[in-house]
Image (cartoon, rainbow, N blue to C red; front, top):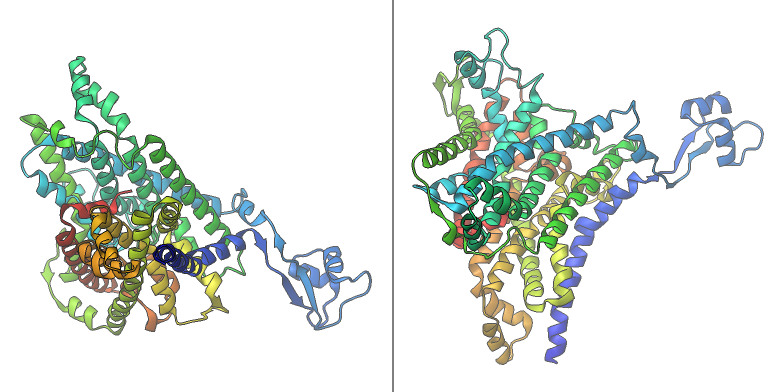
Length: 612
């Protein structure tokens, strides 16, 4: 009996997860990918006084094709008759058509790839020196500075973009400072919001995504065995050669893991291009075409290309990490303390100065949101000339904002409850059951990391929308999409807790006659309660500020979540950016408190939630 119970529990967890992923991920993804390689059956009604030649010209189909498809060897169709003009079937033409010389789609793809590559390159320039100093050096204020480097994680990039618009305007803070420094002529300021809007997008994305690369590189460099460094020094290699021949090669897995997260995030980011009105990227075009899946075959074809790029990159990352035999580093884990060296003189000044400069840039979006939300008059000046709290009061009392906050709280609470239940079951199977059960469950729970939010939302519209409307309340699908996207958070947190919990305690519960479910409820959950709480807090907080799913799926004011409410306030003429920034202050405070709470439960280990 006990053996049957032990087998049923992981089987039930696997079936539950399979059903969840089928409806929440696989079916929508199959729908969007299938539409990209399949033509829909199309029928047209013959118009008044229209002969076969006129009908063929109007529908863009040859007369011979119309006759063959409708078995009309001779004669003319009758008025009002419905004729088949396109059969359903498989085709590669939709995807191939994206790359025609006169098609705009291939330029959108290239722009997105360039944007992602530029963001990844800039993040690497910032993250690698910081990671090296944090992993291998001793200097004053190291722990505090390391914590401050993670501040960008508490603000969605598009909210920071709203605040930075004022600073990046033609006569905003940045241009006024450049004019005073003599780097820009007053009559020809840099048009960050027009001609050079891609520069603004890159700036915002770099300041948001660099912590993902920094965390992975820090872990990779920390795990390099200090004895390897000592051996290199004993051979007479100078510091630069030690870095080039030892540290850099062994940190490549961490760079691949973190760099892929940055690249995918920048490639699929919707909010920042939307705020900067940068239309020439894939994410923006998918957002615009989301409701034209049947009438415009370019929409699912674009989604298919984005999915293939992201999945391929995710697969390369997993292969690189598996080939290196690590999850982000090489050598003896936890041995980095033995390899730390105290900095002195110019090296310490350079380290502290670089940390200060990056942190100053990192908090710039937060400062911009704060200033824009509280500014009364901010025109042609580097800083607001007067202040007011009116925008905050109006934003929080606005019907769209109030319903947005309320809806997000409900949606996030529902998705988090689902994630906690599934995350516990999945973690138990991964850690305690192991074997092929554990490997399969681990792969399923990691799958959402490879699927961008815009792709998932697009698939939901194709699978669960009928004639432009959802077959169930939109809130149901937002809860489902949030739960799918944030399941890795709760699962990873629970896995970390179980790996640190002795199996003997659960075996003692089993010895008292408890079944697997009762052991989980009475023994396991209380022991890993801190991990469960931390994962739940992070899942809830990031669901509250989910961008792509919210913007695409929520089309009616009554179902708007918080992020869609911020965008709608931003679109208001005149003071829209100030109202949106004021509501962004709420998002900023909420996320900061959530991460502090998660850190309280997990301590210094909470940062590992963001590692690749």
